[in-house]
Length: 396
Image (cartoon, rainbow, N blue to C red):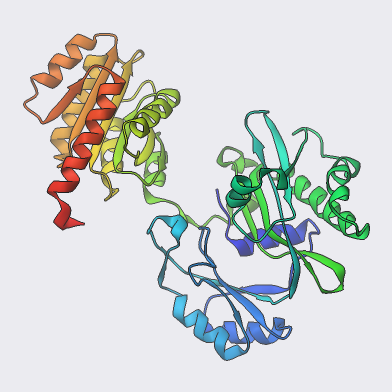
């Protein structure tokens, strides 16, 4: 679960992490009033949508008077907004954050995430903040300092200071950063977060360090322990396909490709996406229907995949273990007849009663392409997606 920036700021403040003054507004009149309350002498106005790259898309600006704050709000509020990180998919702007403008002397990057390779939380700190951390990692990986700690125990100030102190000649500055890091680590553990990011963490006038922007993501499986976090959820920002999948007991993650995937088992789903990439294609989604998928779930999976207008082929890759291949084939056939999809459908079955399943697909009189290996199926789905795209080029 992701939080809007204004909610993330609220949590930072609750944990004693210093932030600029500000407030969220929902109309231009409130924006003008908020400017007068927080200007120093200018304000920064930000659209509140759950996507990165807002600044580059014009959604973060400095304003010099109440009128400019109102004009910005009228320009974006209630309108679709997208960035290069949203792959062209827009979100309706429903609120605007207005904060005091603090002249920045230096920008840093601070985050706490889960290092899945080490099964530990890790503090990420860099003196190069205010930019995409991926760029820093690619160009200068040594600029990112990592401090691992136990999920059962907060890191000590000495542990953090030993990594940050050598980066600064000013002895007072690292102490402020360490204090903020300790508080962020406490928030991360107590609230069951998976990402807590401050970018930039800025040095401003008076040698003060402030969190100027924040991104927070929380573990959905732990939300039952945190009703106060769950109350901050914006259901309209949630991907509609992901919501429907969750209601049907399916694991679905939307991606930016054109080959829809319907697979049983997370490991097989990951392998399927890898094979699509190796074949020169791009997966449109991760969709795990589980080991005991029913015909209804397979059908719902098809519907969810086809809601994505970028899908130009579907690859079904099922291993029949708990559920037999002939039963799976019947589910695919029934779903195909019910949905009457136009995009090519490639099916690869393996496992118990696989020959019976393949025979059912062959005799279905439906346009189903049956493949025997995952490599063959991936290559076929990529090929068919390209053919479909060419045949329907006028539609895009």
